[in-house]
Image (tube, rainbow, N blue to C red):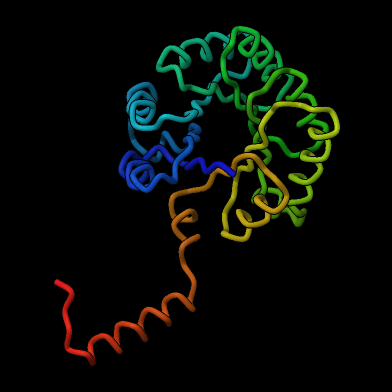
Length: 217
């Protein structure tokens, strides 16, 4: 499973990228706002840092404007994936841009039917939102599983990009189900390395080592 990092913070991306943990980056208008940076400037910097796809989202809501914005964003770098919402206008934009050879990430997916439409429209990625479904007492993992079954049934090449992953359990379950990609904030990805037994074992080893009075360097 590929890891995309969900942020527009350059330092956080760089740290994870140096560890080989970044296969791509996802951004959205909210993350751009938090960064305090110009969208073109920060996206260009991210694209230069990361080899994989970098999702940059359009802000328009009508198809013609979305297509124009998508083409503008695509000019930033070859690894841009234009991000569009799963609306009728978004699907029109997806079809147009994907026919032009552009990667497209269709976001804000909350149902299997929406995912089916996105795949038919040529989406490179479909982004079902796990955490937001959990927020309204629905199981986001059921959606990931339904999409996996549907895509496998018909051989769709659209990659399932599990989004709104808020916990390490979300990531584990996405991997078990077979999501192609998961995107999560840097802090959630870092928590994958944490385990209380690892901490306890290390504390024991260090205490015993101190008793030897030895040094390696």
